[in-house]
Image 1 (cartoon, rainbow, N blue to C red):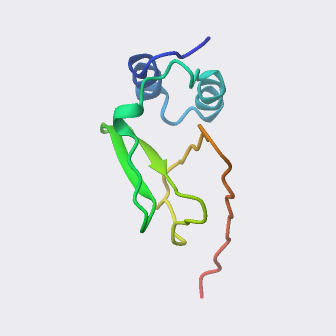
Image 2 (cartoon, rainbow, N blue to C red):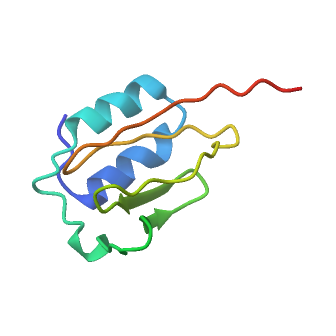
Length: 101
């Protein structure tokens, strides 16, 4: 399997949102050289940007753009499953386990 277009990616994601193994396979097979996302790439010198590609009842697909040295604030996903694929550059991702008091 190889996902080469946004349409193929969106069709793949919709019925598989909770199938972790299948979603991981899809992310690995994503051909970022043929994926046409440049219309969704926006940067801001003051903060990273979250650029929405598609939002359905099942998922949100977005491209996040950081300038070197930028970060996002500590946050949780409220029980949602999050997937990250780095298209260019490097990403440092920190996981924090919060204990309830």
